[in-house]
Length: 177
Image (cartoon, rainbow, N blue to C red; front, side):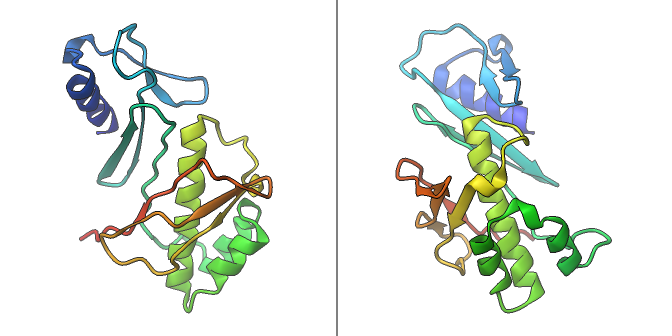
């Protein structure tokens, strides 16, 4: 589904016939258009994510873009506290403080997935793989509670302890039935 979304985007926005679209991936797995085309878009950037029955696409004609979609699910055969223990090194102390401040385990798991999706979307935007130390990235999520369907842009990111002013993160809680 993700490749279909990318092809439709390229066909419509860049006017490249469907059968002439050549997609490749960087060595770290980020998809890109391999066609040598002249376009008004000098650096058309796109990214996809999927989980279960859902696929999402983000695109931007000039800036780096990454996206992630997560469904809050119980962590397989592990309890939530044990899952958090296993994943401890993936978040900063501040992030864990926010995650564990939620009033119940389900809300904690939801906040965990929100932080994870933010980190994943950033890594996908810059095109790096899983070797990147996730402790270098810290998110200050805001607001803590998301209204379904509303887009929020208040979340801030720190990279190596410094606030990143050039990045914008959009967060939306979608109701999945």
